[in-house]
Image (tube, rainbow, N blue to C red; front, side, top):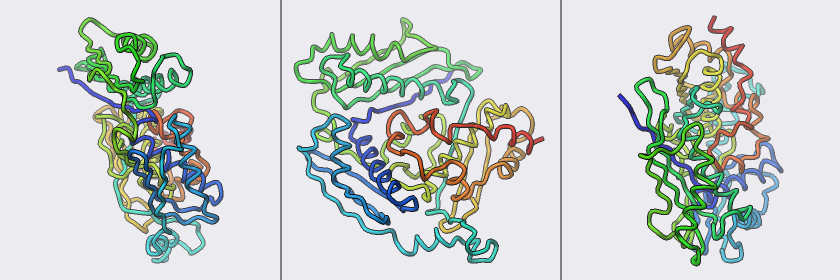
Length: 385
């Protein structure tokens, strides 16, 4: 039986992604001045106004308004047309106490001064990997991100006349009974343009310069539906057209319809927040399992309690593709090969030194990020064997 899977991606000019970019630009600025900064930054963007709120404990505190204006300019919007409103206060002392002195320290399991951190919140995080692309991501996800990357490249380079910052892509791929992607079913692209842009020429340029180069190893066939600006006009875009919010493109940030999202958003949060660091760790572990040849497809689920260092759940699901041992055996090996405490994740992946604003385009799993590297594949195999 064939199945269909769909993935979506948006450009950084999309109002939600703009908010993610601003939030992570604030986070980067905080970590540059204080590597132990605690940041939970939320952004809302609407016509002519940007609201920045949240809890930030940082010494010294960076000036937020210039950061916002620089982000707007980088995306392609005029920062002089926006009013910036900031409502920021420090992190709750109760939360800070649970992070700085985790349950294991308070119960005497770990010594005070061990450097352990408690999770900044409770929550469930999901990581996924598969062997169908070099990125170990589902093909529809990879193609959708290629398209939005192509839109941004074409706009910045001036290759497509009239192309503006806001845009999105959606890709549906047909999979055969063996779970392999075999054909493109639907490709949808919506791209903002200037009012004087000729519609048909614009659509042809998008097809030839953005869509077709992004589709490999598949290609369009006579039954593939290609819809470019299906409303016929996309002049009003960005925050002028739609209100943007931080963390509203969670599935576009991760795995499309292939895996559940644990719950919490990523952007604007420092790595003591396991919503982010735990999700990166889950992806790191899942990708390592596939890279080690232990499975062709894998989902790793982690769960944490606020103020506790060790995860309360580590679960592995290989969807019947495991090659050496059962899923519970792999889960046990994972806990021997990886330190999945917040401090362990931060140290292993260098999360206080990441440029987080780079995660705001084409998903959070670029090959250059540390959670995308799999040097522990051999160690994991040794623990299984």
